[in-house]
Structure formats: structure tokens, C-alpha cells
Image (cartoon, rainbow, N blue to C red; front, side, top):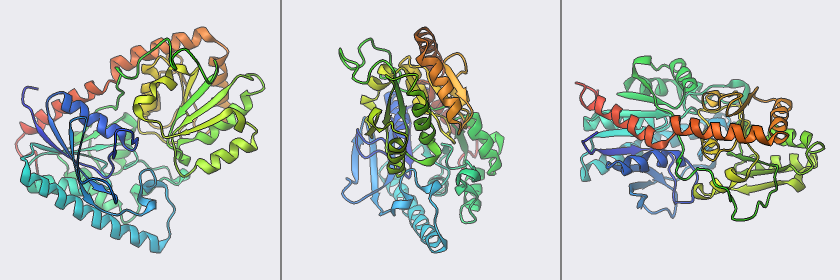
Length: 412
């Protein structure tokens, strides 16, 4: 695309620093658009003490002060159990957020003429994004990340069906100029939530494959976690299924005494997971790293024997693409978009979600067969390069912008 665009990016979540892992994938999209010569200005809420103006990797960030309660923090919105009074509080907070997000977008537009408004999450960001773009007379693009349209009542994941969410979500999906989905599975959930296929474009997530690449010396000259390291990079929430991985590793320890479980990530389920590791007597071989900066993750993927994604729900599964970029074989559940990322029997194994025994069986195969690990790892790298590079995603967003900007009435 020859035209260099000015892109507004309203979003409920955005990293606050280079080491902040929250919604890092949104920043990955933006920084690759910047690398392609476009200007991106993020508009997002700010907690106390966070600068209202900043720049990160060339992406301009403009924030507006807004205090959000803990149950509406990153990762908790869609799976927090709240009572009737708290639902009313949520409605008030969301109404305040949407108004402030809308106002902040228009304020930014006074300083810069935007060509397109491309934001993230149909809920909670979408309504303010679409309304703001219509006010500015420019096209709107809403990227759906899965959780904003995904429903799994069995796992307590039904936020999009709430009576105070459903009509607003449907309005957003039908009034945006275009919607993008990160997987075919995400598309199906969006259609059930009220979207129409003519507005949806499949643009998969990716990985920074220059950063997530193979190396013969993952931790310099040492492998501190041994030759049978099982690695998971996950938010520690129930829907990410880490409890099943802990159970699988406990079952495998007698056969593989050298096994080590390393978990990068954090979340409100961490105390329960640590207690489970204690109960199953594998706390001594389990390390909870907490959040690990994106720039430091490759060394863990390169060092592991197996990377595992045991999710019960997953829009795409970026850690799978990152692991594959590092030539690590992947064991993933069949949740959501994961089977679209991991090719079963080629780049790893796909097993039924919520099944610790199946996880253990797949991990066992890989731990027992170094040649298989190497073969699947190399196949994973090839697949990642062909399909899951962030720069490819940026190119597809460019093509979508160009299509919208040449369509009459695209902003309506």
C-alpha cells in the first residue's frame, strides 16, 4: 500500500510499558503497522500514575484517566461471578468508560486527522469506537479477539449473552464498517452473536518470528531446567486449563523423573494452582515465573522439550505460534482456534480439552522421542513462517483499510 495512513486505535487494554504483557498482541499489530510507515495513535484508559502521553516502539499513546474496579481488569471481565448489585456497578462503569473513550477519541481527532479507526474488542470498546468513527466520517474496523464474542456457559464464560451486553454487542457487530476475526472459530461465535459474514475478514494473529526463532544456546551455555522441561506461557485463569497440565505432569513424573514444569504468566488462579502442585507433590519441580517480558520469552521456548497450551477456550493461541517459531513441538487442546494453529501429528499434538490423561499421553510421546521432537519442531517453524508472521497480519490490515477507503459509504 503506497498511501501512509493515520490510524486511531481505541482499546480498553494496552501495555503500559515494554515489559507489560497485558494485550501485548494489540501492540504487536500496531508496531508492525508503524514499521510499514503508518502512524498509529492508541486511545486507552489510564490507571493512577500512568502517563497520559507516551510512545512505545513508534506507536503514539494517548490515555484518559479512568479508575476500573478489579473485577473489570484485564482477563477478568468475561469470567468474574458478580451479583445483582455488582452488575449495576458494572453497567455504570462501562457506561462511563464508553463515554470517556468516545470523548477521548474525538479529542485526539482535533489534533490529527485520522483516515481509519481500528480498535480492539467488540465489547467493551466497540460501541465507542463505532460511534466515534461515524462522528468523524471515517471507516471503522473492530478486531474481535474471541473473548468478546465467545460463549461457553459450562465454563462460566457467557459475558456476551448478558442482558446488559447482548444488544450493545449486536449493535456494534452490525454497525462497524468491518470486523476482523483471529480464527475461523472466532468467526462462528461472532455470527452467533449477531455479525454477518459479509463484514467479517479472517486475519489471524501471529508472532514476531525474528524474535521467536531457533537457537542452539537458549540460555547461553546452560539449560537450567534440564532436558525434559515442559513450558506453558499462559494467563492463570480457569479457562486457560493449567490445572489439567499440572495433573498431567504429576502423572508423568514416575516415568520421567527429570521432568520440570515451568509456567510463565500470572492471574487470579495462581494460588489455587500452586496449592494443586503441592497436593499432587510436584511443587518441587514446578516453577511459577510470573509475567515474563515478551523479549525474554524465546529463551524458554528454545529450551523446552515441549510447549503446552491446555486451554478450555482460546481465540487463537499466540504462544503456540511463538513456540513453533522457536522450533518447539506443541501439545494443545482442541479448544477454539488452537487446531487452526497446531497441525496435529505434524507440528505437535492436539488433544481433547479438559483431559489431563490425553495431555499426559501426548507429552509422554514427545518426551520419549527426541527425533520426533526435532522433526515436529522444524515443521512448526515452517508453518509459523508461512502463516503466522505479524508482518503478514499488518499487510492484510493494510489491504482491508484500502478496500474500506475506496468503498462509498464505508464509514456508515
